[in-house]
Amino acid sequence: KEHKTTNNITTSYLGTSKKLSKMHSLSSSLSILLLVNIGSPRGALSFVVSPSLTTLRKISDSKSRLLYKSSTTPPPPLTTVATTPARPKTQTLPKIIQGGMGVRISSWNLAREVSKMGELGVISGTAMDVIFVRELQDGDHGGHFRRALASFPNQAMAQRALDKYFIPGGKAPTKPYRSLPQWTLEPKRQLEEAAILGNYCEVWLAKHNDDDSPTGGLIGMNLLTKVALPTIHSLYGAMLADVDYVIMGAGIPIKIPGILDALAGHHDCSLPIEISGATSDEDNAIAFSPNQFWKGSGTRDLAKKQLRRPSFLPIVSSTTLAQSLLKRSNGSGPTRGIDGFVIEMNTAGGHNAPPRGWHYEPEDQGEPVYGKKDMVDIKSFAKVAKGLPFWFAGSYGRKDKLCDVLNGGGNGVQVGTLFALADESGMESAMKQNILTQLVQQHKLKVFTDPAASPTGFPFKVLELEDDGPPTSSSIKMLSELLELEDDG
Image (cartoon, rainbow, N blue to C red; front, side, top):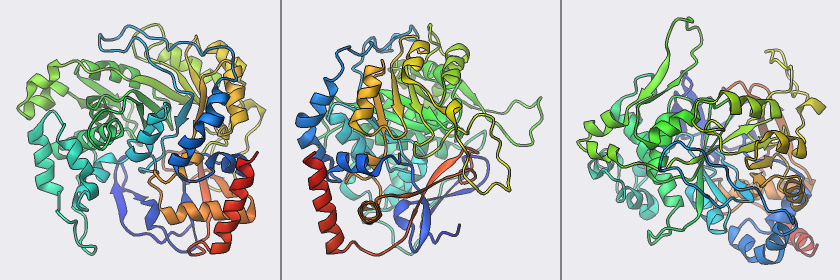
């Protein structure tokens, strides 16, 4: 498909330069890669009511609280394992996880609002190094990144980033961005600092009010397992900001529990990197030493303060994969560092696990075909979860689906579409309205599970939109009337 794009973000996370396009830079008649969960249009609209989370908060007392009380059996407590003294013993479990959607659709603004409502707000850590330096070059509107940088434990590093990238008032539109070096197995110091600072700032902003006071809400970070090179540095930056959860899919994150254990104590760690064409005797891994990193900044004492180890929730698509992670992950404790699961069905937005026995062939033009073997039963999963909490995703953004999970022994649902269309998400406002208008006028969305859209090799949801210009007054009126009918039951 041909895309007319501007302001492309060039990265090399997968060993080859890829183009990650900002949502608002797409124009004309096109197909876009939209990391959202596409469920029933009627169900989605009944939850949206208005694209604003402020409105959602107003109806929470009349609908959500009653909904949460529908299960008479309380959810099982979060299982804790002995890893480091900083690991939390207890933690309030959310019933709703806001999906982690990149690049920065799940922004700190969105995650903060969800967390303040008592649920789990999630920021996307994808490409935060690039986003960080570009936001500074755009003038850091509102001063949010500078506010977060003022709290960073190494002010010399924060000032170094400001001196290098911050442009008061923003750069000229015709002037190109000052770019970062590409990721390699031995990343440059400049790149390491940008990844750590960018993820620190995004998590810190999600956990603090505008007056810098803590919100007290839960914040998680979502990363793609296949985007492996910046993973350790992204995790470390988020942990410095006291992130509560780490959620990872698009691959099998079997090494992440051990990395989280190590980073909590500032210990050395490494992550194996799969490289096409590499021989079996090559040891390809990216390593990180917090002690050496802080020593290079002249603040080695920062490695002496224990960090709180976040809870880790891998995203799985089968009971078999969940069981494998519980047996083979490299974390400590009886569940090997696994603290729960998110189970994504094949209708979930973003990346999907391929169907059982399916192998992509270049000549394949159709969608992967999913069958009964690709479905996961809630009660069956509860039996293999070893008492760990779990959340279902993929067309579960409806109250009846939430009740099904709660009644089946689960803890809640992960939802993307509802939050991607909220005012606080990073998606361009005109595009949000375009999606809502298409739902109203056509009562459906054109969603295609593309077997080759993502460089990760996983099937990926593509939402096809036509640029029909700004919404008309008639379409807005039609939408308002429909939402009023949905709100009335």
